[in-house]
Image 1: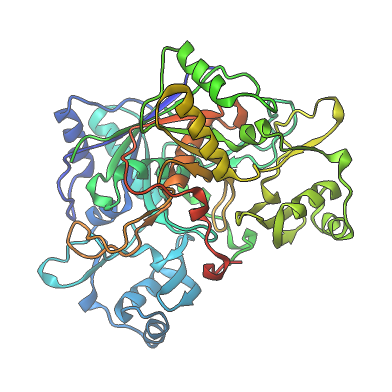
Image 2 (image 1 turned 135 degrees about the horizontal axis):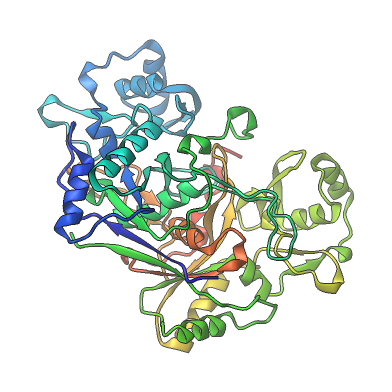
Length: 256
Length: 256
């Protein structure tokens, strides 16, 4: 058994990210400015908000026309009808609604509040209030970032796009992986023997979610303060699988 | 904004832990053997399994007499009736049961499979099959460990007792905090302003759960391989709160 250390380091000094920004160039530039560089096997964790921003997933609320369903649901949940319209347009179905609460199944299968749409920390500028949607396809975004890091540095890194989600049964949010590339989002060790030779039973590990939660520890609470974190020292353990593998199929879920 | 690095380091070379072992003495001894030491503000994450073991929470299945309810539920779930009896004795109520699945609300409020009772990696010895229950009171266990670390080293550390739990909606397990001491298990920033001066809305962070998940990354999959992890570099941010604060009260939960 070897010593095992994992290091989580925030990339500091990034500017406020804007649509169209070159996230990889900015990150590599900041690392170079601090005499740091990426290594093969590093995992770069990027906050969903800045990925959504560079991808232009901002919507001005003044441009949104709420449907009758959105109007009714907005009344039930005490939310802005235009925001509810956006939430519905990003979702497959409503899972729970209560005053102040709208939990939906996002079109990509994520279950959470408001389809991951956020108004905080988004600079509306002069166009009025804006909302920020999740990336169109976070696994594809992660793969693009991974390819760009390789092009720029020659290093093969993993990428995780994380976001803070609430959970049933427990208070508070934790970082989870919305998208990933170049690493096993889940590690399936069913059938392996444990230290006593007995077969391990519950051994599907949500590896990318654990990476996402760990990175949240250094991102700070106002998510954009330190939106990129380098994770170094993880054991490579298993074939690459995207974060979509973390979504439990509805028919295998006992809680929706 | 300062640079921010968090380091997760497994304590290596610990022996297989047995009931009554001095976990703190063993940990401090292994650190010293590698010329390491604890610092004020470090968080020591300890796997639930070894805490349960030192506390003698092993039960020989041959000593368990299943009730009629346990027998019926064992049939429904394809589980050992003696194990089901233990699960029920540790629980407030059954949340879901299906063939192969028994999700309960543990007497301490944790919702999960089998009341956290584990048979893997537990050395039954000659007495036959054994099960390992969660610690009687994980927050109290964490507090005792924290006090013992202080007595032994003069260092004021935080302690988290972690375990791997499944979640609704997502595949795989992640590390969560069953018990903690000397740190804010949750950080409540509701009402603080974000980077744009807008009020943050969803800002209760499950800090101890994120620490628990991060530590899982270096513990290895067979949990006892590296059951103690030192987390260094976390920002101190808020009053100490035990992990019991992470349990969502049933009346505020939409999913049980």
